[in-house]
Image (spheres, rainbow, N blue to C red):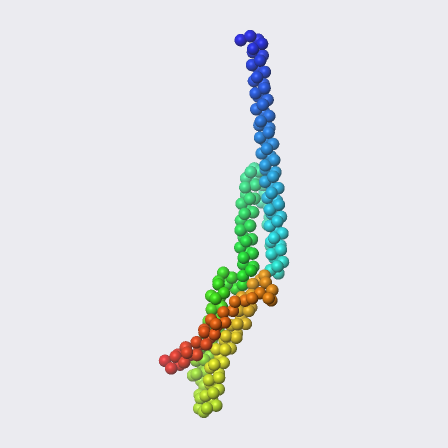
Length: 208
């Protein structure tokens, strides 16, 4: 190989090395730009989520949650960004759950309205049965007036139980986010059946 050919080969090697260095620098710049874009996108998502949380807290009339302490960086931008993305996704899932529960009644929020109302009417119905049995055992209908009073009392107790259940549902079943115009499912037919049937149960228990 002549000196000129050796010179050309060195020039080609230098050119290849410079091209490799330029490509590596471009890849580094692209990676740096991508990390910056990811960090900016995460910051925007976090700001939007924080605003949504504060708006939800105001609507629910509660204090917004305190800001969590920022964990110390690991020194690896990729690891820190991955951890931040995972935390943000978990926070978004928790926010969706909180928003769902805010539009549900605070007492037994995951129950259906008929299940929750049935429990409320049933509790007052059980108290009504106990009161009816007490009246039947202690009250003596010696004349027509006493018999009428006893009948009125036995009929009035289920009505009182139904009315108290109706009022309780208005308190226990009203969601945190809602106004007075929000229609509540009170299942009044279910309440009438549960409370009215206490007459039958009380008489069966008395004469058994």
